[in-house]
Every structure is written in C-alpha cells, then in structure tokens.
Length: 331
Image (cartoon, rainbow, N blue to C red; front, side, top):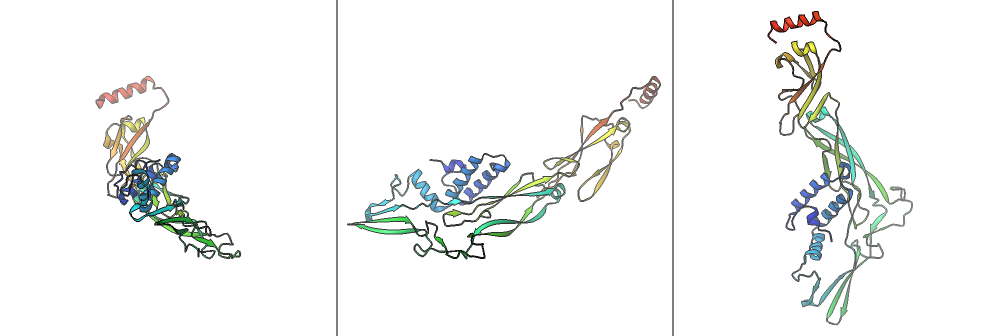
C-alpha cells in the first residue's frame, strides 16, 4: 500500500493547509511538462485527492494506520450488534487537467502584467441529466437486514444510475448539446504575473480543469505555465542581465561611447573610458540596471566586451610609431 504521507512529504498530523501547500509545491516540481516523472506526478495527484478529503483521509488512515480505537481497522460496533458492510466504491476519479502556456516578453518580465485569456472545458449538459429518483442522487442504496438481534447495514451501488447519482433523460434531440450529453464551457481567466517572473513559473487553479460528469469524479485542475520570449540583446541570470558588445583594438585603448537599449523603449549611454583600458576577460557592472521583482529588488547589468582584433601584421614603421606613443604615455 502506498504511503500517501511520504509521497506528499508530510506527517500524518499535517493540517489541510499543509497538505495543500505541499501538493502545490510538488505538483509544480514534478509536472511532466517541466520534465517531471509522469508516474510520480500521478501518485502526487492520487495522494492529494485522498488526504485533502476528510472522509477519504479517515478511511485511508483506518486501513493503513489502524483506527476507531480497535487498532485493526474493522468497522464493527459490537456493543450495538450493528455491522456496516460497504459494497459500493467511494473512490473518486480526477478528471483531466488542463495546461495553458502564456507567452510574455522580457519587457513584460521587467514591468509585470495582468494577462487575460479564455479556456474551454467540457461539462455535462444539465438539460440531459436528472437526479436519480431511486437513490435521490446519492449513487448508493442503503439496506438494513435484521439477523435476530443483529442488524446488518449494507451500502450497495444504485443499479438504476450505476452509482453516478444522475441519469440521462430520454430526450435524444437535445439542442443544447446536440444529444451528446456534453457541452463546452468558455471561461475567462485573469492572472497577475509579477515583475521578475522566472521561465516555466507555474500557477495552479484548482478545479478549473475538465469538469466531472458524475458524482464519482472530481474536477481537474488548470496549470498555467509562463514562457518567456527573450526578444532583447540581453542574457538573463536571475534579476541580472548580461550585455555583450564588440570593440575594436583602437576602441579598447582610447574608449568608445556605447548606446545600450533598455526596457519600455528607453536606452542609455556609457563611455568605456570610465572603465579604463578594457580587459576582455573581465565583466564590468552597471548597478541597478537589471530586472526588478515584486519586492522592488533590482539586479545589475554586466557588460562583456568582445575585442575585434585586426587581421593583419604591422610593418616596422607602424611598430615604431606605436612604440613611441606607448613610451610617451608610459604604457
């Protein structure tokens, strides 16, 4: 038997909030779209479905940890001579999760933004479904059988609705769903993406995925994944940015004025003379010109200069001129 507490990395006394927090963390870490193991992701889903439902959690603890004070998990109450046999299945199956990728620019990462989009999900057609009259929508039928001084209570699956709690009407010409029993629902989603968001940041909207078709199913979740289109000349490292530019051998020594593009259509100028003679093996830092995050922390801009050396040899006259010049300025 799987240990759901170990799978969610919590102990058996964890609160509902602890269970939810751990599930969200692990679901994002091990999601198949982010390279995670599909089987482990399914186990995480299964563990959360069980431990987040108080009734399922109690049954799970009873079976695996021993419960109700008798230590063996047998649901018999001998003082009252009552036996409870449950022949129906209480396991609920989670419907399909929806995954939606949001594409944003580096300018969006710098500023943050609110993104609105539509999703489609399938739901049952309410015009075609009605509550089962036999079980009153419960999906189970309870029977009491007297055996002398003992009462046996048996819960059985309702055969009229097959345990779903609802039945399809005989209206085969439903205009609402074209008689399929399923309709497509359009839902508007709004998400606030903060400044400094990272690539593949995942937001989970619980129960916003595929909707249940019967009482034995749970709604799926919606996973929104941020994809960043780096349309800038920068390389990103956290909140820091790296900008590479070329210098000629002449500019390496005497300097060059450089215009660096920035965000929101802006730019700024620097002159390399402020760094002295450029060392191509060194990065030069301009503070507080990187990305910002939600806490208003700001990274730095690091300049990396690539030297474009001339592809020719110097003659003796040129060597003498340069030698005299270097001697004059003590280089």
